Image (cartoon, rainbow, N blue to C red):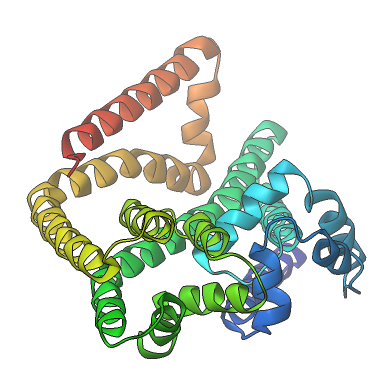
Length: 326
């Protein structure tokens, strides 16, 4: 076995170990008061300064944390991580993307045994996949969690309504949700209750919840609670009506999803297959695919650009057809 094969095997093992480490880190339990609550409280500058001074096992990760956290870019990443319930700091997530993209870029560069231009393009493709895969995983986790939360929202409202009719206060009803309901809705309302117990006003705690869970139905519920607290009224009846409305919306959305699932699946597959075929053929036979970049180069590159533009247009047209608002 030559040195190149050993190097490739070592890189593959390293990528697998990084993936396992990320999975273990993202599924591990952390202290809610110190980590989760501090991450979502706006204006908690003292907590942010404390997090910046925490000792890190990696100097590079610590340097990235100091550069990323506190910036607008870092705040957006932290918000997306919160919505996906991934227990990473924004700097840690950026560090992982950089390392993962660098490994795949190096792996693509050394496995293409042709010209330097082909090696460079392989490295760029590897880096692109290294950046895209974590982002796609993050978006997928956000979507799955939001979907699960929205499905639990009507049952949560029924529990709150029953608690209010039994004589509970609004905070006691929300605390019952945090104890009786399954995850993720119980986790989110546990954070709301903890914030309120620390002295955060209810309207701000609910706004923080909406920032973590960007749901139209949840926005409707929070607006109703805030309005009732200011002007009064039978909150139990209001929430009962909202619960019925949300259930009907979920039912109609489910029927629409069934009717449009074929269009969505066709759009995803038809759009993804050409890119995967190009990448696979590039690594299997780069000399054959390199004809796209042979003189006159504008012919091959023009064909590729035209194909990509047509695929993107077709994808958005099919998604627009399947996008029916309820």
